[in-house]
Amino acid sequence: MAITTENSTQYANTQAVPRIQNPTHEAHGRLRFARFNFTQGPAAGDAGSIARLVNLPKGKVRVILPLSRMAHSALGASRTIDLGWGAHRADDGSGETAADPNGLDDGVAASSAGAFAPGGTLGGDETKLFESLDGVVVTAQVNDGTIPAGAVLDGHLAYVMD
Image (cartoon, rainbow, N blue to C red; front, side):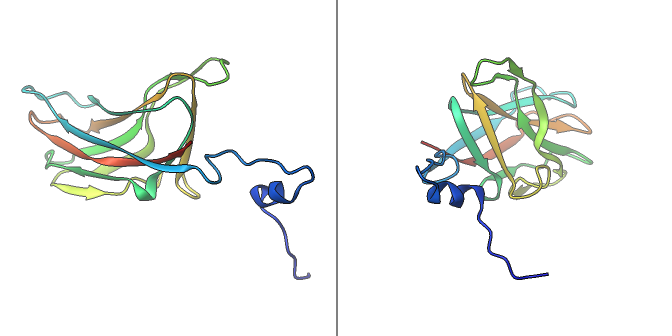
């Protein structure tokens, strides 16, 4: 075995002749935040009820979960929260990307009030690249029981784009 020096794809792009421009969701993109304040209406929702939290812009948008945060009221015994997205059209027009209600986080305990940084579902660097023609709706889903009337979900989603 020997000591090696290797390049990431993004660094190699900067050394290529002619130089290859990295996409802004990978280098020099602008960090943005989408804030959400959700309150369940006057009636409780059954298990599996969806809360639409934010609409991410169209194009290539990379969500950065470790910089994102969600706070929630006490939802009741054994309740969990999933974080995911609704169906959306691919930015290249190739078709529709299916909804995934737990694609960003899955089964976060929410019996008592708390807050968390989403993660653990994606693995690796805990980012998710969305490539959409019309934008992507990020959703929360309450499972293992009803979402009580007046339940609150507040927070922000960090993402990069330009």
